[in-house]
Image (tube, rainbow over all chains, first blue to last red; front, side, top):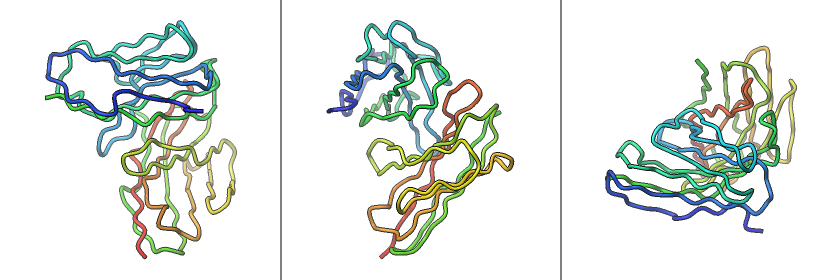
Length: 116
Length: 109
């Protein structure tokens, strides 16, 4: 199985433009997550979804929005990109969806985004 | 605030043993994860500890002491492919993962 796929692999974006990072999983996992990873910092949670139809804010949600219309897809949108959003973005999923899960998170390959 | 501390970088020799430490201060504790991340790739799961003690899985072992807020990852018989970053993450009282910045492990022949 493919597991988790993300698109695009990398992107250069002009400041002020909008962009949607795509994430799809085929493991039928309930929970999905978006992280950003910056040099010298740990992974930081942007938004999450415990199950289809629900979303929640993570540690750094400002400037980002998500939707979870179905189990498989969890797109992340930057409405008006700023240079501080230059980062590597990882999507992840886990089986448990109760919001009290200790299940392992599995990661997609990441999207490298540069905002100029 | 919540804090996960790991050394930034470590160097070890092929065939040797290395211990990567992680200390944490979090609001609540529901388990500790170790992930491996090769450069330019996604993190991949290595281990999960929720009870005190040592969990062994092949060449890798993970130890947890909840009273000390401390864990370590032990890698034996090091191979060149073990060159990677090792990420420590704690599941807090809200069941959200708090991540350390990672330890970059360099293996020399």
